Amino acid sequence: MEKIKRFVDCYIPTETCNLRCHYCYITQKRKFNSKLVNFSHSPETIRAALSRERLGGVSLINLCAGGETLLSEELLKVTHALIDEGHYVMIVTNGTLCGRFDQIAEWGREVLSHLFFKFSFHFLELERLGMMDRFFENVQKMKDAGASFTVEITPSDELIPRIEDVKAVCMEKLGAFCHVTIARDDRTLGIDVLSDHDFETYKQIWGQFDSELFAYKSEIFHKKRNEFCYAGDWTTCLNLETGSLRQCYAGKELCNIYEDISAPIPFEAIGHGCPMPHCYNGHAFLALGVIPELEAPTYADLRNRVCKDGSEWLVPEMKAFMNTKVGESNCPYSHLKRMKIRAFREGSLLYRFKRKLTGKGR
Image 1 (cartoon, one colour):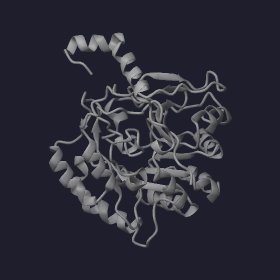
Image 2 (tube, one colour):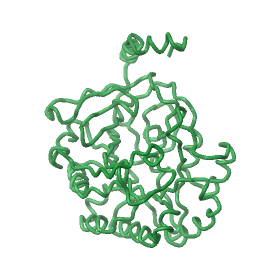
Image 3 (spheres, one colour):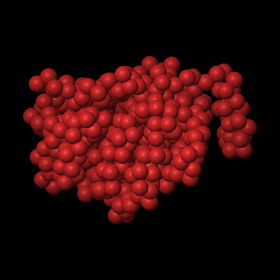
Image 4 (cartoon, helix red, strand yellow):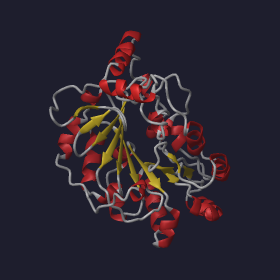
């Protein structure tokens, strides 16, 4: 059975979309600019830069744009190339671009067994634009073609009066409730929940979907992580266009993957130095095992559903792969190596400056 060697979270710098959801972080920060990515590197180059040899083995690669990921037709060739390399690929999409799914459906079940879609279910926008049937038809098309998927809704306050409608359409079209994420306010320093309700009330309202994803995100949201974290080694964040590979969203840059494709990637764990207020996407990083001593469900647990007809959202190959954790394929650092990372961080000018300002240590 194949196990996850590394998780690479790829950002696609497309910052335009055919929807306008009020809770979207691109909308919040007024970053929509009609920018559609044109990759400056060929699919073959991207495949070589993210080869199994460079990553150390078969990896899980997430592709997500600032806007709608599948607006870029080039992304389909990149996706196919990464799957041909042996990796498992996830695509975040709003599920409305029928032509793209028609193309993907032609790839065949062997290829699609390594492909997973995170369908973002934007109920109010789909209803406003008359795209509800289109969305569910595309989900079914990918399921029938042999791909894995999950359907996930962002729990906004404006959607609360329509919760029963959401549940009804999900049971009718999917045979199961959609999963629920947490709406976050990226304009706040603490990356707070985007809601007028207090967090306990928010959890009570949206807990009725019995979503493992929502339950786990609720458990870890607002909790600062102080454990030794292997982000930067076992997981990384990549701008797929520029090639900038970082430890995590706020970690240091490790290298540019395109500068010397023959060179090994200098993976290095962030350790105890996470600067983020909390691991708001810990449903991926933590569930995949970036902090190995932390008890967490598997990523498959958080993404799968069993439908009323007995079918599942994850095909067997993807389910087995997502049930593994990165710690199963990587060796933990020695105590000496962990201490060196801490000593280097604490010796940095930035660390000393922050300590002087706050009067705090780590």
